[in-house]
Amino acid sequence: MAVSYKITAPGFMQIQLTMKTAATSSVYLAVGFSLDNSMGNDNVIECSALTGESLSMKFSYNAGKNNVRIKGEETIRAQYFQNETTTITDGTLYCSATVDVRGWASSNGQVFTYNENQTYYLLLAAGSALSTSLAQHKITEVSSPRRLSDYGTNGGDSGMSSTTKMRLIKAHAILMLLAWFFFIPTAAMFARFLRASWPTLKPGGMLIWFHVHRTCNTLAIILTISSFICIFTANNWNWTGPGSQSSKWGQTHTMVGIFALGLCWIQPFVSALRCNPSHPRRPYFNWAHRGIGVTAMILATTTVCIAADHFLGLWPHRVTQVTLSLMPLTLIILLSILSILFKKFVEVDELNVEKINGIRELTVYLGVIVLASITVTLSVFVGIGA
Image 1 (cartoon, rainbow, N blue to C red):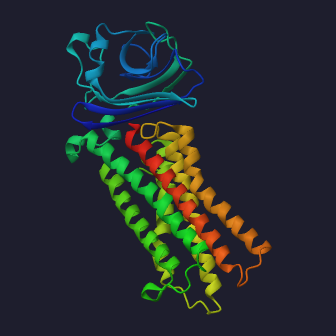
Image 2: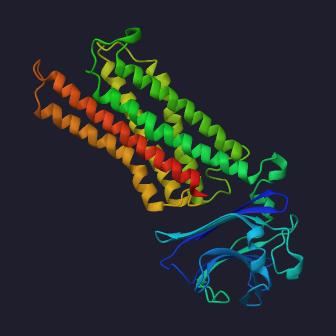
Image 3: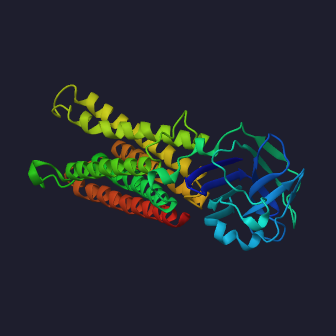
């Protein structure tokens, strides 16, 4: 179970709560904002499905060792929990929202009121929910004391609203999907399978496959650079990898993604070093170029799968997302295996060369359609996910 939060503007906090659970109802995950390291007189923000009710985010209060409902709190939820996302899918409970933490006078201090100078202990608890309260927690974690602003960037300093930040994050995701799941695999397929196609067509003195390969990779580099700028702008140019205050999976996503981008961005420089096709060292270049590309694709796929599996505020369909995210790399591997088997068992001669090239071209065209479908589907998930 985990909680992440960020003060996005004066009086507003972006918060996410997530955990693995077999339950689909009568369950909760809650974070208490305590002035000491034990339960009692604590303001609570919860992600709960009370008995007979759907999952939602709520305010509650710990009166001593008991959690109690706040009178009239249900009347302010729609106003205080903005851009709310709540799901229990594929064994994962997830809630996120931008929360108004300026307090509610009618609650007599029971609704959480953020004080930027206050040091809080975060009490993270999970368990079964009743019809009118939360049952005693089965799992609990207590943080070290902290000022909440020490673990987030105040949106007032950057002038960025939570809506703008979310749009930048979604732009980052969609641009990466286009680059890694459409343009780069398309470039690889044309280079790997269509070198023998259209031998008499040489616009600018180069074969068609090379034009497509170079153009797609160039577009991919432009998209990844744009995506990189989007996510760093969304995070106010703060590092989110190892050593940051991001979640464990957030740090891993950042670090693996950086390695993938590094390999992607050095490929043009590696290509500039290629020797003549007849040069005895050309095979070394070919294997280095391919090796870097395959490694980058594996790292990028891993990065996207981490996001698909753990960033449920952005993508709501966990199993479908992970499955689709694995398909572009799987497609390239399967086509490569088929190509190897084809070369081993099918003899190419003047009588069948055109037919064989036609089969290869059709296969690549179908592959491009599959890649486009995967990319569009995942991009739509991102666009409407939260």
